Length: 306
Image (cartoon, rainbow, N blue to C red; front, side, top):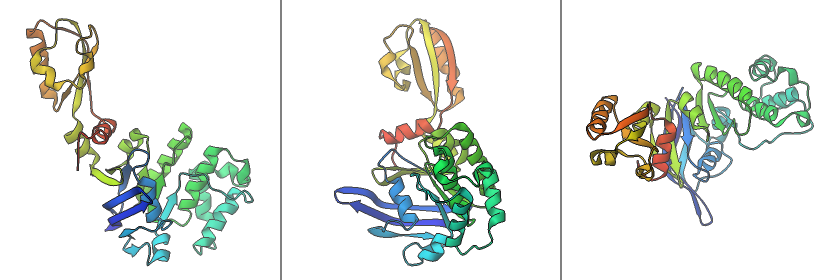
């Protein structure tokens, strides 16, 4: 079942083409990453999914409900955690969540509210006024508000930006549990290590377009490769290995660290043999596995296209 269907969505703000015919399908139960640099169009796309911004063209459906025509049903299926800290200063944390429950017609929701408060580490702040909370605690309340009606689809827009390690661990433990229970999670983040650890599939946006999408494993395996890092104590790198250099700037610098891109571990021994046969002596050798950051940088620098 498709949880979110995005078909040829475009949006322009005067001279800025924020989204340009974006199409994505996110399956029910997926943990999906939506990645890209600032200004790539991620927040605009999320705003359209949430029904806060109207697309110029294209359609978005949540569990089959069009976000424009069937707004009520689409919104009931969705919980969104925004980037901005928006809160009502006149209510306590518990009152805020009860009010949010009322928007969805949930009159007796205290048991679930208590569970959310506990799992997000907010139980000790339940009766505190929103104005008295720290920025990190306010962000936890935003997450709680998005979850209060138990939506099958949860969208997190930079949920851990500027927050401490404790909140990150608490949040991801709870969100991962919800994902295991069948909830669809869509995450935007600049912390690529989080995306790599959590997401099963990712889509990368650049200048309002999807430039690459796929499973985490396939992107890392087939796009980036690994790197063999070492220093030459003596000798020089054979010319036959120059095409493998990740960075040519250090080639002529004595004792500098060199980096060779490889695709498989079986390539290491032939490389070392070629260096030895050329009179080279290696020190500080290590094999660095590729990660999502390597993939992201390659794509954003134009090294890989969809």
